[in-house]
Figure 1 (cartoon, rainbow, N blue to C red):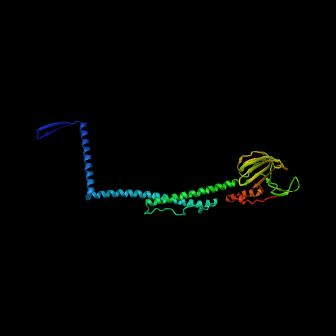
Figure 2: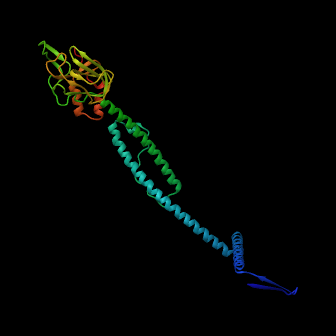
Figure 3: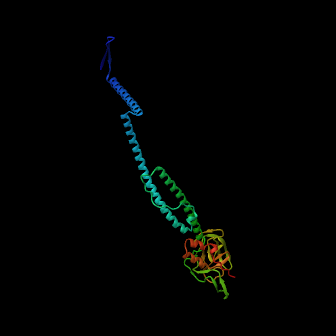
Length: 323
């Protein structure tokens, strides 16, 4: 493409030759320059009009700003409502947790009033039109504080329940022979060897030779010996001055110093020592004084939870001294 430029003053002409590529690049450059110029003018006019309060420009600016604020407010309101619903659900769950904690604390023997816990509040949070972000944050902070207090209460109850469980496991309430029946009970009787009245300091469980003898509770083996009267004998210390004795065994599976658990096999029924036939002689000694083992075994069958734990405490044992 050829362009001829004529200067009337100088009476000169100039020919310009543009190929297809040059023409296209020239048009693009011209278009870009026009766009930049238009944008700059629009921006300058718009800002000048907004600053000086031109009627048309000012109204347009207020309309744009108002629409932006409305969108932002609508977005915040939707998010606040969603968060408020979640907080309401959390409050409802906290109420359920509080009721559960009261029931469990009763089982654990813990009085919630003895622990500093915020007073209970019921009802779910309902988002109203006046709800603000500050109110929501305050509610969340309160819930966090209540959750920490509930955690403290649950920790105390867990410790108390664990203590009760340990006490329960250390009280000799497990039957030492599962398939045996009681022959001679605890108390005064006619001695089978001398024919005279004598104190029988335990329970005799009649069973076949080789029948398993089980630990009545967890503890530590403090004695494992062959005794002239008791034969193969085992004594287990359960703590709190409570010891159980297992006598006349034919075979022993534990040794002194072993740590045993409730129901663990200790030995096998036999007729060693001062015995007229295969049986287990089972004793419970509290502070060295023989007690009626049947009271402990009955406690294991009839009592549970805190009552069982209290039955195992030395202060609650009725110790009878036999001379």
